[in-house]
Image (cartoon, rainbow, N blue to C red; front, side):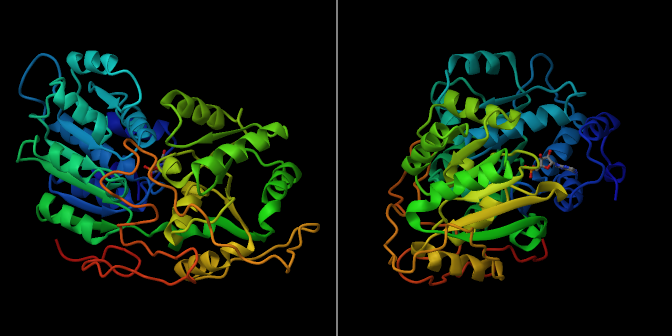
Amino acid sequence: MSFDTLGLRADILRAVSELGYTQPTPIQQQAIPAVLKGGDLLAGAQTGTGKTAGFTLPILQRLMDNPRTTTGKPVIRVLVLTPTRELAAQVEESIAQYGKYLPLKSMVMFGGVGINPQIDKLRRGVDILVSTPGRLLDHVSQRTVDLSKVEILVLDEADRMLDMGFIRDIRKILALLPKQRQNLLFSATFSNEIKALADGLLNKPALIEVARRNATADTVAQKVYPVDRERKRELLAKLITDHNWYQVLVFTRTKHGANRLAEQLDKQGIPSMAIHGNKSQGARTKALSEFKSGKLQVLVATDIAARGIDINELPHVVNFELPNVAEDYVHRIGRTGRAGCDGEAVSLVCVDELKLLAGIERLIKRSLPKEIVPGFEVDPRIKPEPIQNGRNGPGGRGGQRQGQRQGQRRDGAVRVSADGGGNRRSSGNGNGNSNGQLRRTPA
Ligand code: AMP
């Protein structure tokens, strides 16, 4: 299937083809016609599936098909909400790229940076606004943003927004939008909470779902290196140096662990930086751009900070520590092997994490190959210890909000307890199956 058959304008197709896209991804094949029809949409798709173009291309087409009625400066006709600053920036960048031949203005807003330049830009007029919920509400309270003309609302990574405690902010924003509008909701998982949000928000939505990355991760070579707890850093440095890995995204469980590991690797001569919610926006942007340009060899991230980082063809993902929530493993390795490119995801697993590993293998329905690096044989005398710190708390605005407890997950993802033996639990989420997947039902 080619893009030409989807009913998009020549100036949109030109931008798409200049980006090197030759055919629409499965989510694009389904989402583009559905959004063009003007109805609501509930889509199960993760980052890496091409979902951004899936909603952006038809939105641009619709804006051009139905020019605004007022003359003068643009008004906000499209609002895209995202959970993290990084995702907001990436989505807006994509919109600007796909719309480069159109006379439409887009803008991104998030907290942690000055509000005045945003106010100036809003005043000059914007057609498409991409924002995190918190900063948008800051503008609402200062009356510097007008949402009364919004025609299309997109909630991107809605599950993560709920995970990060943004539900009240989202409800406040929804109350400010015109009742008559098109709503598009994207989520990787479908919990009862997402379903409740979708039920209240969407009107007879088209339902689409594309294969989850755990079903399609065949382009990603996955490997486990068993290693002792205290020797992980040494092994990681060896792997990076021996294999000459560049652009390595390393996951740790905690912000503190991320900082410590990045500092230690850096001292060893492997250029590394940590990225997490406690870092300033400036530091995050700098780390990300240096990583993308290849100047920075290693980026150490926590799960929440890494969500939304989109780097094409990321060759290496390392789980320095396994996540407590098995599904986060799938999110993590979804950072690599994008769009048909090969990637490698390796996990350094110590005796404390064997039960987490078993939970992950159950979730992805396969056993991961294990490789012992000579000189790093596991010492059988070392006994497992309970994993400290639990799951890293939300790294976004406001940290842990609304009484969300450490380790608590509300999206129906499979949870594997760190201490209690890989018990698999899924929520009975009506429309979803035990993987939190969306079941297709007629619209
Ligand atoms: P997303 O899931 O929207 O974050 O997109 C993942 C990556 O795939 C982005 O880097 C896009 O530039 C890229 N991409 C999106 N659509 C296509 C396509 N049809 N062909 C090739 N790459 C694409």
